Length: 604
Image (cartoon, rainbow, N blue to C red; front, side, top):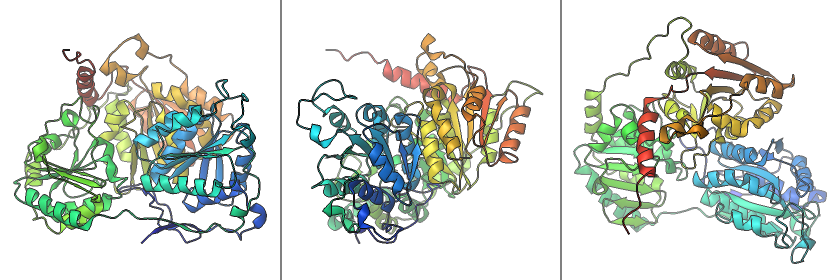
């Protein structure tokens, strides 16, 4: 059945919680405009605004500039659409990224070139993470195209294509709308392509066009269809038969979920396969939060040498492993040190299955494959039983002495107790990757981090966007001091939006993750008075509470306040820890990634 974009009823966007957030056009059907259509509003800008609301976008993260001001007026005028003004374009892009992780699609709006090139890094991150983000840019006056005029906000050449060329490598479709005749088609094609491909798109709208009525917009937008992706039935049956034969002869097979479960919308089907097969179930680090950790056969995170205790031993000793949507890069493979053999693996990508060293089957959708395979597998809990036999419950951090300086492992033991179905965790690039990875997520607790792109500072904007998308959840963000210095300004926007996020600012004096890869004086940063900075940003407007903690007693009191008397406030807790206090996983991972980075050139 086609997915409709247009005046149809819609399924309510859901939280990313456990299981797959909506993605790849998972807006089941699309909502009609909430007010009767008025032909006086038949403008390009209002059409674009309506389309955003129809696909499930209720918030657009924007930075105004002279080329997009009229367009912003149109976005503001649309019922159901809220314009969130951000402090800079990079954070607006990160916010759209965080929003898309929960709602299935996000949007940002910036001005020409100076805004576009500023947001570019965030759009590249969304591309790497398979997130449909609609990046809207206010472009030059349509009369200036094809002339020899030089415009401001450019590099001083009459060629206006620099921004477009930059976006071509990090978006799946680019629409330059500089005339009204094909504007309707370009906008609709861009939005539908973002949903189908689950990638960002770029839409540039000339600054003089958005407010002009035009006949193509003179009626309520006609629904258009997103043709569904379908499996090749013969290929599906052959792939399932080959995979079932491969797995049913294995003695101790396992399943490992990867990050592309989200884009394939196959989280539910993956769990159904685990239920049917009885296999031990684990996830790659970048798939944490996509698979329920309360599943009876869940054994943790598979991350090579820094896996959850006993998980790597079970996965790497298996005689068959099914990987669902994996990305094997230098970070996820711990410097290419995974002890896996290709001939033992079934690699299932969103539309392709590869069994061992071959054969490979194309045009086979992951969710179709899992559901069909579940009916063909013999239950085999051997790997999980082996795990259960060798498993030893993990210990707890050493008890702190009174007023002893706080340790990071004690901090995360307290964060663990805060988690529930009403919370979500955002983990910043750095040691928080490893500490948050060890958190046990209760049912419906959200979890997000950016592993493929790994851009420090991502979490501030992403926290803003995620919290805006699911106001019913309380977001807990774990952010290092170095990362926070990159994007700190948009704590201001969180306050303007009345968000009630809890930010743990982990102050250890530098870029700890980089210290463990390769140390140098450049990894030491200027210390800030972080609570003082947030207090200055607060400036008496909005609900905000800040505190510094140096010991467990102060941390306990701070958490009690943040979850009690200040539960409706943005709570900023600066946690001061020793500069060398890192997780053991970071120490191991850093040394292996360092070795991979420092490999000598191959002989010529």
